[in-house]
Structure formats: C-alpha cells, structure tokens
Amino acid sequence: MKICFEGSVVLPSRVATNAAVVCENGVITSVGRPRRADRTVRGAYIVPGYIDLHVHGAAGFDYMDGTPEAVRRANLAHARHGTTTIFPTTTTGSTEELAAMIDACAQVRRHWTIADGARIGGVHYYGPYFAADKVGCHPVEGRRDPRAEEYRRFLDTGLIRIATCAAELPGAEAFYRAARRRRCLVTCGHSNATWTEMEKAFRAGMRHVDHFWCAMSSVPSIRVRFGTPMQGSMEQFVLAQAEMSTEVIADGCHLAPELLEFAWRFKGPHRLCLVTDANRAVDLPPGRYRFGNQDTGSWFESDGRVGFVPGSGLASSIVGMDHMVRVMKQATQAPLQDVIRMATLTPAERVGIAKRTGSLAPGKQADILVLNRKLEVQRVFMGGTELPLR
Image 1 (tube, one colour):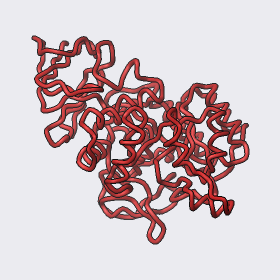
Image 2 (cartoon, one colour; image 1 turned 90 degrees about the horizontal axis):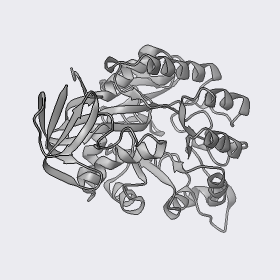
Image 3 (spheres, one colour; image 1 turned 180 degrees about the horizontal axis):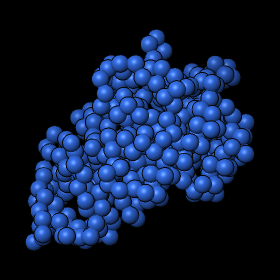
C-alpha cells in the first residue's frame, strides 16, 4: 500500500511546509510534494519516529523484571508516546538478573510484531558498573566494578549496542575497549571521574556521557576526591571535546530551562540527544514503586511529575519522549528541526542505525509520527503500519 503523509515535514536541517512523505511496503520512497496514494494521512507536523537510548521501563514494568511481558508492555507504552526504536536499559543487579533482562529483550526482538510496541534497537548495558558515590536511586547492593568474565558474556550476545561504565573504576579501560571492539556506543555514567580519567577513557573508546549534570562529576566533587589544585570534571571534558556526545532529560523536573539551553548551544543538535531515562511509573498514578527488578529493586516515589527518593534526590523520569520534545521546544530557543533531530537522527547516528531510521529520507523504514501543533502524538506508524494508540 502507498501512503502519503501530508503536513509540515520536519527534516534534519529545516521544516518543509505543505510537503509530503510517501511510503510503500514499509519504506519511504519520496519526500517532497503531495502525491496520489492509496491512503492519505494529514497532520500539522510529520516527523520521524523517536529513538530512546536510555530508558528503564513504563506502565508498571521495569526491563530488569526480566520477562518478555515486561519488555513488551514497557515498549508498547513508549511507542504510544512516539518512540519507535528503543534501547532497554539495565540497572544495578545480580548477574542472573542482568542475564534474564537481556534474554527477555532477545526473545521480544526475535519475534517482534507491531503489537509489541517500539522495536528494540539493542540493549543499553548501563548498570552495574557505577562509582560507589554516584549510584543515585539504583539498587546499591548490585553495584560493582567491571568483571571481564561477566561483561564479555553479555557483550558476546551481540544484543548490547550501548555500554556504560564509570571511568574511574578499576578495569574500566578494558571494559571500554571490549565494548568498542563490538561496535557499541561506549559511555561514561554514574561517575565522579576527573578530566585525566576521562582522557584515558576517551583513548579507550568512550565517546558519550549519560544524562548530563545528573550523577556525574563536577569541579567541587573532584575537589572532595583530590583537594587542590582543583581539576576539570566530566562536564568540562564533554564541552571541550568535539567528538563527545551527551544527553539531557528534558522533563521539566531534572534540568532548568537555562541548562537545557546551555546544552543545546554548546553541544549542538549533532552531539546532544534527548532521552527519557523513564522508569516503571510512566502512565501510572502517583505512588510508591520499585526501580529495577520488581522483587529486589530500590523503592522510589512518583508525585505525578517525576520520580524521587524522599530526602535524597530524583529517581528518573515518569514521562515519554513526546513530553521531552515539547519541553525542549518550549524551554529553549532551539528550532523545531533541532529538537526533533535530538530525539531521532542524532541518537540514530550515535548507535550506527542512521542508514535505516532516524530521519525522513527515501530508502529508510517508514517510522513516522503525526503530531498536532502542540507537538502531541496523534498517530504512530512503524514500517508503514499504524499502531493503535488506545
């Protein structure tokens, strides 16, 4: 079937008004003027499906629950918020819990249909290699230094496409090299690393930092470790190194508008990604929930706006990528094409899938969203097939 999507088409560098995207057999065939088709779909904005590199769950499920049902239910919830390619993200936990999570993702990916929600682009191996003083809301009992016999087992599945480790940990450089050899996006997160430790990590293949300003080092935190003279931190290294990319949680609760503006101005849309870092409380009422495995995860609370640990700090977001896009557009001077790029093409480029998705271009799979003028998701198509939103 040939489908013509008509509206303002958001391309990586501009917004084309009164334009159209035509797809046939699940693939985009042309971008330009409206054409005769078997079906016409109209909307205020036509944009690529969102890509989420960092996400823990939704709809009452965390990927660390380790079951295909948990993966499917979370993926379906995020698809209804516009995410068409997703990278389920681990947290701290036992080797057995990590293995169950990765196996569940593999099963869902192997037998995927649109009823399962967002496609799995790969797994983000995020926990358990965090710095002891930067664990945040994650279960502290599952934190550890990298162990080659453990991470090689998981990297060798071929499912992991993003791999995180705190740069200052013993064995971090070996982990980075192993992940780089397997073509992963290699990242540093939940870390109190110095500029010097980041330089070593960079030489070993690290090119990305998780959720900028969240659970990461600063000049004052480095001073606590080493005293004076004060040293540079992850923030300075990321801003100074052009090859480094990072991400922001633009939910309106984690970062103030000036920080979102700062990140966009100084890293630009080619090196800044939007992520949800969402937990299982997405689409659920305020209450008390587990972060991580449903039996062993740490407790956090949702107030209907964000997750938090009372008296401690924030505990991930509780909203989808559509919310991140709206906040980033409202809170900054970034033009719409930049905001959409940060949720689509830039993450696709960072994980090496931009040839097949991430922008509206002939030859790419027809992962397409129809938005209204408020940037709310009205319709979701994956491979040219529409996903029911209810």
